[in-house]
Length: 454
Image (cartoon, rainbow, N blue to C red; front, side, top):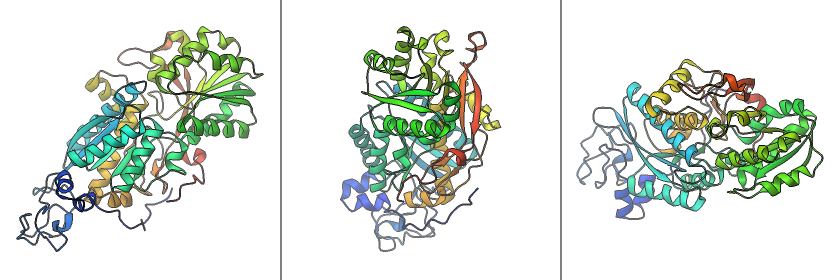
């Protein structure tokens, strides 16, 4: 396992300095965390008291102090505690809304744990991306400029997350693409301040290629025709072929969509034994329901590279029981640490929710951003980057090694799961309908070369 690597990038521009340069309104918007930033004084000659928030000089931001002190980082109060404002910008409406809500709940639980365990105060502000890239970027920009957020997380949709990550990187804001699985996120569209705390499509697909081939020799891949589905199709194709299987054809489908009948009929006309579904959220629920309603389960085995339990909890158990083998970034049946067991119990207690993958993604995103900022003593994106790259996690929900690679992918174990028999499915105190199947370590399934140019 690699040790923490020395970051040799130049630190990005502190957004307080960056936006102050565009005018007084930008400077006011960047007030951010409480602390003794010299927002009006000349400090040590750069107009912001060294930008570190707790100088030991007498600078008070009114133009007459030296203001630079021995800075411990943005958001440090006079008592030595740190305060951060975190933006959770995710899907709060539309077909991915239940995924975004779970990310938000996970982030709130992480905040609670951080405030209990560390000398830190965290304020969360949130916006709805409406699952639209331009809207997501605009909402992130609004939170940075008006609310002074120190860093951000969320996204759900990969196309939304990538656009927000690009803006965040251009503007000196650390951002966790909480639920973005497209290979492009840490591949050819990676960005210096964007991080992925969950598995990439290729990691998920590489964990299940052998299991798919054990189920059926020949497959059709049906996928959502945007960046997540496109890279998912390529990853499933590659993994299945490496295992010895055959991909007869791939069928793109529009997103969002509420009728997959024509695409299922198209698959039915092909000579294949299995159907791989690279479709997510409520649309995954729709296509699965139509798959069984149309009797396609009599023709095909089913499998997929992204299983999220909450999707299937919206169906009859009899259908869920026949959905085949799936890869998952997290499920409540995978091997847990002690913290993971606590996490499951507290998601149920605090939010009356059944824990699933998006809770874990939101939790990890908040936890990793704040802990990196605490180690750095700063919310500066460049300093957070230096703390994350190569860092090996010592607090995880899932068992197994987790570490941040230089392309900003969190390397972690990947599991496959299958449904329990209907009579063994649990609904109380939380829903748990699946059983653990196989596990592969992160280094086994991650691409050696992601195509990221960082």
